[in-house]
Length: 115
Figure 1 (cartoon, rainbow, N blue to C red):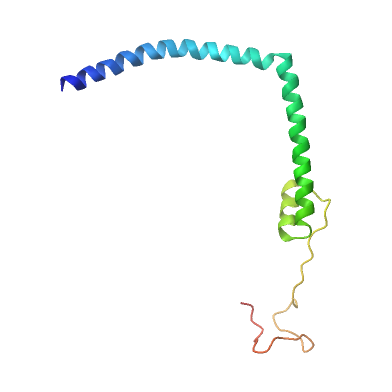
Figure 2: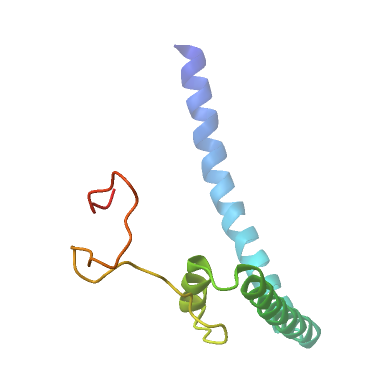
């Protein structure tokens, strides 16, 4: 029991001292970060990185369009990215009504139901 009490006392003292020193150190780090952020050299570097990232996104988007082509996934990606540069995929479907016409071929053993 004595060891627990000593441990808890040590934790309490460490907490109190740590919070006082911790707040001062936090403020020092925050001020330094603000100075670095406002530095013109850092601003230029951030602008260059942002421009390069924009170019990479455009490049990746073009590569994805080339690879996906006229697929359903490509149409979904284009709709999410707002690109209308590639044509939408062609989907072929059966008759609009549920009953096939006499000229519509059916596989043997098919009852016309979609599985």
